[in-house]
Amino acid sequence: MELYKGKYWDVIYGVWSQDHPGYCIVSNNKQSLSDLEPDAWIELGLIEKELERVCEKLFNATMFNFCCLMNNAYRDNETPHVHYHFVPRYKEKLKLFGKVYKDRHFGYNFWKWDLNRFKKQKDIFNESERKEIFKMMQEEFKGENING
Image (cartoon, rainbow, N blue to C red):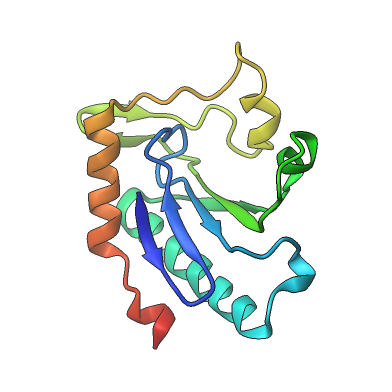
């Protein structure tokens, strides 16, 4: 689900999984980081700042992991494209939709645990709740903070 479409970047909300509430992918069509125009880096910084603001305000997120790996495209012989994973992290429990979310591995690399099916962070939200998280973020997200 598209949260933002800019000149260089799209922000896709991870409706398929909210094991870290507010998780999004920030995507560009370039194949390498070195292909990015200077203005794309500026827009990326503004997007990151806005996503942080939204998740702090709505969900009281503590900190954020922002990573660009691109390994899978090369592993799977696909054409790579530059994208970042925006992963809000939560030191305190989050109460949402009558449920209590706990970031089980706060302070640790989330990928380390997400690859372990026994220890991975669980998505406690059902599909309608994940869509409601998107709606909350969509209503709060201010594209004008990025586009001027």
